[in-house]
Length: 155
Image (cartoon, rainbow, N blue to C red; front, side, top):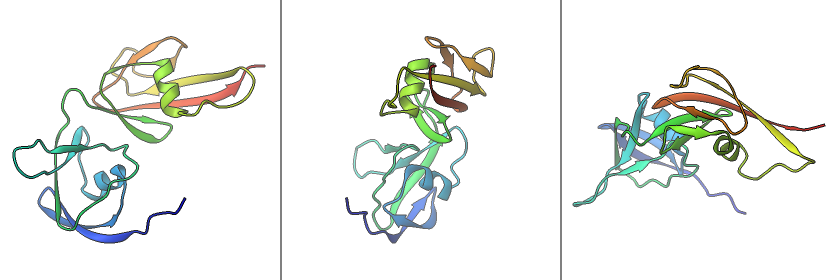
């Protein structure tokens, strides 16, 4: 697979000009524009169409010269979580053990009888931190619940 050549383009985030590599990633755009916690970034579109959300967990975002973006408070149906240091956007606030494992390991690990542990911090549910049991659920905050999902082999 050939990696795309990157060049720099001027874009505008919240009416401020920035220079960004193109293509870039969602997280890099959020960091470049200093998007506040609990906010999402929208790509402005022409005409009577709704502006498009740029997901923070999108690996590749193609930009156009002088393209405009703006940030706004995240709608109720967007929750930004961190799983094993990677940001993800989910559309519901109650996450299951299995959903978190699939986010952390999209390709199931190989090995005999794989097992997982899930720990969390800054959750909305009580307790706000701890270990999530297999089959359990946790309610996340709108932005900033952190998960650590580890893979082990049962012995």
